[in-house]
Length: 498
Ligand SMILES: [Zn+2]
Image (cartoon, rainbow, N blue to C red; front, side):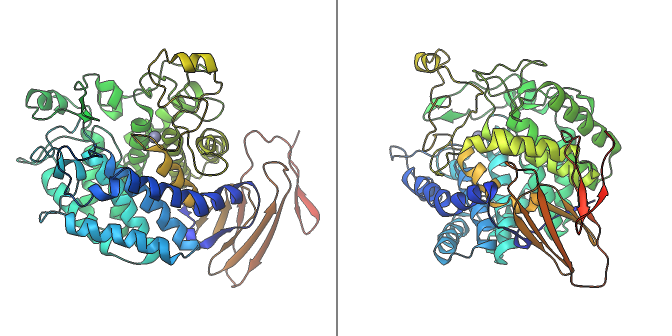
């Protein structure tokens, strides 16, 4: 398995991606912090919100804060910023005070729906929020070496490990919105605590098995989902949340695209960490179905505007494409994991396709406004008529923020962490995945890459070995590139057959 480059080992020098990352760091992080403040999200983390106060928390509040912290963590790794770090530390202090004695931490269930925790996994987003908080805590620990947040989340994860699982007396359920699976595998990676991997495996494999947990949950339901004070009917289409059958039997990506791809990223992790060939086969099946039949030329996925989900094979309309920014992020997660596990550049081809198109379209050039959906064409009249009643998400202008604000901090954390996708390593060997002006440095080697890619396809690479151990440099040849020349010190060493 390859290792992704550490955030600290990569510096972007100039060019297209450099500019996007710079705007993200200098403008977007601050803009999003102000939104978290103004919309009450940060205040609500203190857990003293009461009925009739403004900014009623909803089920996703914690995940928005978490993704913003994660974005900040990666940014701090390469660009220290005392003010920004102080803001994050203050939020972590609030979380520490708000965490319950047994480890539980969730804004919605500690204020709006007290007493209802873990009673409606399908419709609510408790485990989804926990997953994002875990990811953020790991990023903050890895980049600042401060462990307070990580300890908070380990305490919460320990609670989850005691509550969920296959044993008698445990809840045999799994999240309605996947995300915690990949987070638990990450937490296992940093703590070596096997319980976290076991719980991730349980969530991955139990999903969709008969008797279906959600049938039982609906029967015993205590709480229903509310959003902006409206009660939303309980979800009965299990395919929408990929719980209609076990993952080992699935051959088609279906349902809500962000759920599906977060799930697949977690499935890939569990498959390889537990050496489960059937799960690996499922990843291959579903990846092929996705990129061959259900993905736009932009790398956008989830073509159904009405329900944010996949449609049938080849149903890829341009003007009503949903292609959520979060789905682009999630596809990058899945594709990169598969590349690291299998060293096959086809996954980076997909990653690059979605990065430059369906992902970056989600943020304005000035870094202050965002698309939730990323259609390939927009008919102003159709949007103004709002036939589908979804104008809040669909439009011809990017928005400053959303009630359900999953996408803005998601693209921010992806851009902040982009260095880890550019290079990968395998012991002494280095893989260049994405061509962009940058440096890579580890104990043995320094690389300097200069290019104006994607506007110019010439790539200049300067490699310096600073130790005696030999490194092999692997260059990705994109699948679309059928003619290339490789020169070393001006001498041609490889030209492919025409
Ligand atoms: Zn989103």
